Length: 141
Image (cartoon, rainbow, N blue to C red):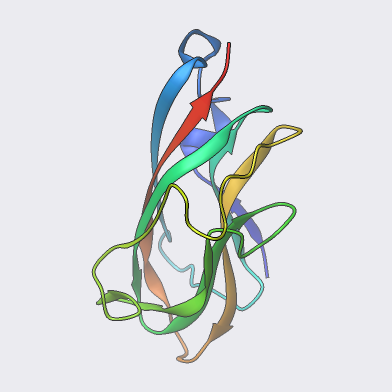
C-alpha cells in the first residue's frame, strides 16, 4: 500500500494563469521497474484547486486485473465507482468517462485536493503498466 504521485501533482498544476473558465489537465502514471500495484495504493493523478468543478473525466490503463476507483481525498470513488481495470480498459471499455450532470457531479471543491485512482483489490500477482487520466474542470474568476 502506497501513495504515489504523477509529475502533474508535483508541479502544482494548473498554473494560476489558467484558473478561470474551463481547464483541461492530463496526467500519466507508469509503474517503474520492479514496482507493482498493490491493494490500498492511491495514485494522485492531478491537482484540483479550491473552487473547481469537474465536468469531464476519462481514465484508461492498467495491465492485469484490479478493482480501482477514481475519486479524490474525501471520496475515493466520487467519479468512477470501483470497477475492474486491466489491459483492456475499465469495465470492458477502453476508456471510462464521467460527464457533466452525472449523478456524481456537480461537486465544487471547498479546498485544494487531487483526483486519485484508488486500488482496492489486485487479483493477480503482478500489476504493471500505467494509467492515463484527463480531467476538465470549470473555474470561476
